[in-house]
View 1: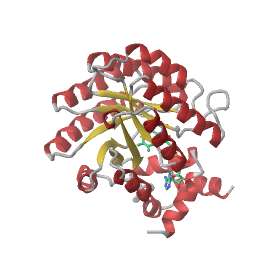
View 2: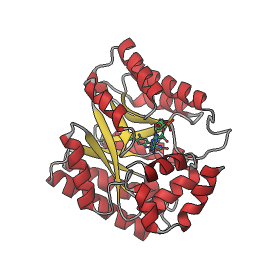
View 3: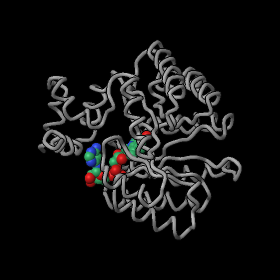
Length: 302
Ligand code: FDA
């Protein structure tokens, strides 16, 4: 109830106040701030995945601008020798306006990334986007098998079946590369599991499927229970370090993050930055008011 109230009020709060909590989760507004945060993480033996904030645009002009910005970001981050990859949201490239144009813009970004020997991951957005995002991934993966990955969401009822379909194109030479996360959007019950225990159970089911089928997995969670169970599955299936990594969001659970690194596992942090931080933060909160409790903590604990 309190969470919902705070989430509803946030868009009307002064930007400066919202920044007080957002700064913990967002590297800044500019490329320079994104670069600085990434370099600091690299110094701690952590790789990054860079995300320019923005989503659900309304015109193709915005898509072209986002495409140009991503290319510039790849240019700058590689020139500065940041160790990491890039994540992007297809709705930022016009997925819901013109799918073909969206594909062409993302292809341009990926093709530039390939020239720079970089990897691009396609984030998974809400359930209306899943079919198109899988289709987009398959086309890109076919052309650039080692440089493109996709996110899958454990809360979706369809995910295991999607993985079974995608398995057809998995090979030892170019294993499919997924990020497995719980899923952040508010979805209807018929589309997504709702209970915490159900989501955990399906997360582990999907993870086991990926390990068994020799797919590469970015295990993206801050949930200690899932981390512990991921260790168990890694042991059970003798998964080599070259076939998985852990991933976390910028500013979240640094102690758990360090404990994973201390065990010798690869860690990657998702580093969001950009001018759209305010819309992003308030939208996320409206979608998921549970986040408000983290914000209250962030307001008081620095
Ligand atoms: P859960 O939400 O249960 O959190 C476990 C614990 O972590 C909490 O109890 C709390 O202690 C801590 N915690 C979690 N979030 C916190 C926060 N913001 N601040 C402080 N503490 C926090 N989703 C999606 O739909 N599409 C996508 O493409 C991605 N991409 C993505 C990339 C990466 C690298 C990560 C880590 C996550 C995503 N997500 C995502 C988000 C994901 O779906 C999920 O919503 C969040 O990771 C939260 O789920 P957890 O597994 O961490 O569990």
